[in-house]
Length: 198
Image (cartoon, rainbow, N blue to C red; front, top):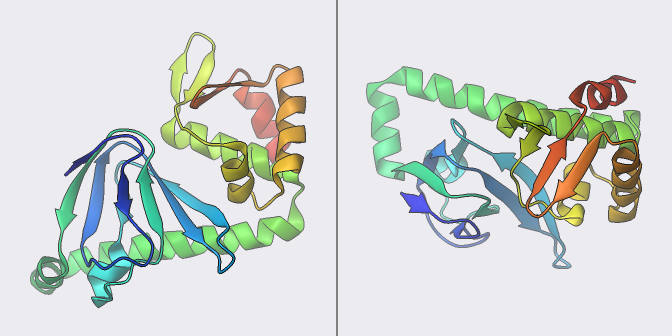
């Protein structure tokens, strides 16, 4: 399966029971509250699996919306094929348990960090992680090609957009990073990592 940037891959609440193994590209995972506020939950890239809950339990209602943040190529596996594969090859289910465990650990860590680290530290940690996972080295530093708005970045670090804007302004003034159209360039990853550890 192939998707272009900004294509909706899954829509929250819509019925489908297949999963996608991402082979290329990036996606944004979002969910809406009862008041309609949309929150960015995660970014997934090559090697990640999305839609695994519906494929595993057959529940056709999607729990989140997934949008392509870049051109995406993925392998589609429907519910019936997934169940059959896990019965024939139990190691697939073991691998899936590892995927779910990793996602649960990330969610648990994020909840702890909200009460432990400052917005500045959480933002630095997220940017360092994005650079390690999706960045590419260039002459100006490490470039992260993601179309993240400041509210989306704020949602990733569980902070207000105003707080994140202040931190980004400080980091730009210190020439640690720069923000362009649909990308962030980290000029000094070491300084950012030091902030994340402080």
